[in-house]
Each structure stands twice: as structure tokens, then as C-alpha cells.
Image (tube, rainbow, N blue to C red; front, side, top):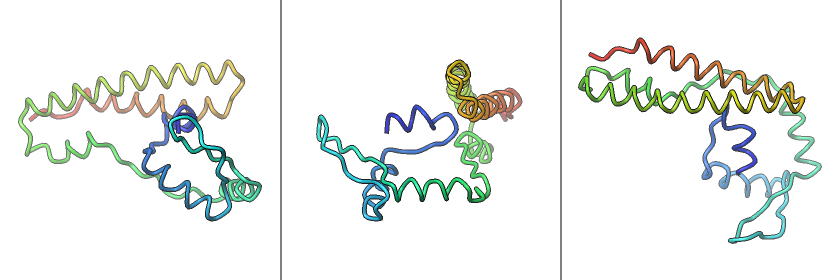
Length: 144
């Protein structure tokens, strides 16, 4: 989970419950195999040859439409049900989150470029642009 978060979290959200729900299904399908239990009863998994083939096929599929799920924008859609104070608090919280996430994504993109990971850096630049866009939108979001 930690490796997946480091690699994907800036541009792909996931929860522990999603990951831990899917791993046994992938094991049943022969796409991953169980490793030796680790500390604190952790259960490592490793991808199998069949899993690698399935992943390679998945990479070539058309990805489909984006899913937009922004909890701040959702709440703003119900703006008339909020007080001005509630909206300001919502915007402050979102601004803090996107500011921190932008700094982190920029740092990760810089590190990826230094490591020669052109494709990883490109994906991280998407996260940079997303957080910039969110911060720009927040500057003009209505209060009342």
C-alpha cells in the first residue's frame, strides 16, 4: 500500500479498504500470489506471470472517461444551504490541502525528472496542473 501511494496517490486516489478487498480476488484469479507474512501480520503479495500479462493487456486498453470526484466542488454545488462562514471554512481547508498537495507533487515530479523517470514525471505534472487549477478556482468561488 505504501509503495502504491508513493507512486500513484498524486493522480489516482485509492483507499486501503479498496486495495485489501481486491488483493484476495486477484490471488484467486492467479494474478498475484501470497508471500510470507511480515511484521504485524502484514500479508505481502507478488505479481505472477499471468498477472504481468494481464497488466500488459490492460495498459493497451482505451482508458475510458475520467471520473471527477471533488468533495469541495460537490459541497459548493449546494452553496445556498451553507452560511458564508461555512463556505469560507470549506475554502480555507481546501486551499490548505491543495497548496500542500501542489508542493508535494512538484517535489515528486522534480525527483522523478532527476531520476530520469520521464513518464512518472509527466503523470506527476498532471497532479501539479490539477492542484494549480483547484487553487485558481478557489480564488473565485462564491461565498454567498
